[in-house]
Length: 535
Image: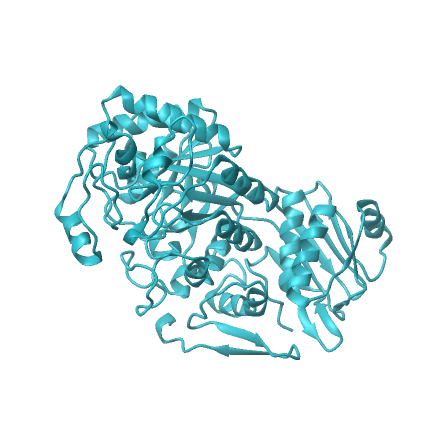
């Protein structure tokens, strides 16, 4: 008998060898109130059923007494962080979380197990014992190239948390716009937030907007990682504080990007809506720059309850190597002095005075080129007793890469089209020589938005490839179990199609995946799209 489809693949799943559990209108949810609300909403969205709930005391009693016909949700305090156990029989379902997050993830798994039956809905009789491979499992949304409002960010949180991601990295600033209101530096949003790539409208988050995002993420067991990208990617600063910025460095590469993608060359003090990168820089040796950053990073740190503060550091082509080294050392210490763990893109691993608590984020390829791996290893050389790297290989899990050569969405600079199979068939511990699981904080799938204007665009690019990234972050290593293969994933993720459809996720049915559909009677069928490009 084939095992049911769960994504990301659990650490252990076995068939209980009995009839399924029937989910009908009278099925009660008993136990933890927060998890019960999440499950009730998920079941209603998927099935149309509105299940009754009972208080926590009833849940604990049901778990002990084996009350039949109930779905029991409980926090036990046993096991590693984020872990859970799901035991489904014909008589009952018990989901036990080591903590509130683990119980939430168990509820997401239970939602994936729901399937239509002749009598209504059912959950197969299985036992799942599950825990994440990595503690940090992130997605990134770039709200600088194109601004995305609070409702869109919340929808992205819904989608990501259901796949057991627990961090939302918000890329808040770039050449095209500044997206977070700061009371200490109000000109940033007054003068530098109005535009996006291609001349599209901009926007920004007020303090209240930002708190709303943080609170919503927290309710879904996700922390927010804000990024203020420095010292490059800072052209927007020139609109508000031109005295802090160097003149753009207009290399041949910049001119090629303008030629290929349109727009004008950047000019200090003029809003930039093109797609070129690497031309901007703050004034590295001016103390006014560091007074500015003390205000900016200090306010962002106070607004953000999570442990991380991302200081960028990528593609600073308009900054000399000596100045870059000086800047990264100084700003990483500033972030650490604010009580945050600094995070920086892998280029910062070369800085000689990098704060030893800094976490590096690798955006190079699965097979690194141009010494990118050596730069990333710079983070593990200091404070090496801690996990120090986040893996975001661009040619695997940059969700903004084209999934098809003919797609109007996405780019192709990361080794061309990124198919679902290529997004899946890599392993974090095999990317950088000498960096194994114990030195990897986790995995993050970025979604840059040069071509992304709407939630529909996000869905089309991110799904199903975000599920592949989720599996790299949560599940055992590739090949460690019968589930951790491309063939297994192609079947399991295809089975999520009816769930995603019910949730309004406009995924792209990529090639080589066994996509399941349901008709009006609940009958399911599976069809594989021509696998030519994914073979």
